[in-house]
Image (cartoon, rainbow, N blue to C red; front, side, top):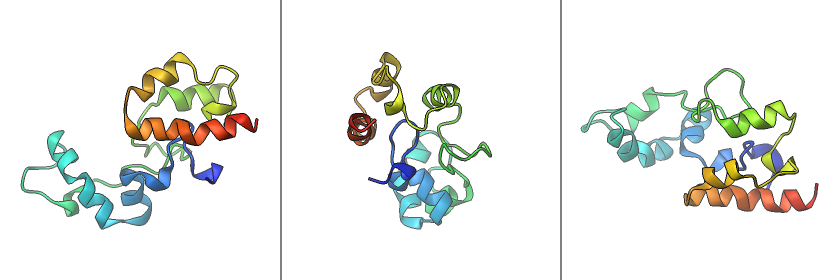
Length: 123
């Protein structure tokens, strides 16, 4: 795992549909987001991947300072910035309660922690 592709929380941006739509104009990634966007009312019931693509930029990754970050004001990213850390695993408190709560049973959040644990062991 290349440390540069990881968001502060450990999510690999290159595995994220929102990032793929923005950075790579990936129509397959947009298709995978259609039902999710429809369920949130971001696109209409009869709209498709093209409607998702029109919403871009969805996310330029949390390292981007333009504000085009899908997670918005992420408290994990903010915490890392305040502590001048690249990733949560560089913190002596990792994994803290905030991080554990963020995982919340979500598979892609658990995977993010799996990416960070080996980095933690090397810091």
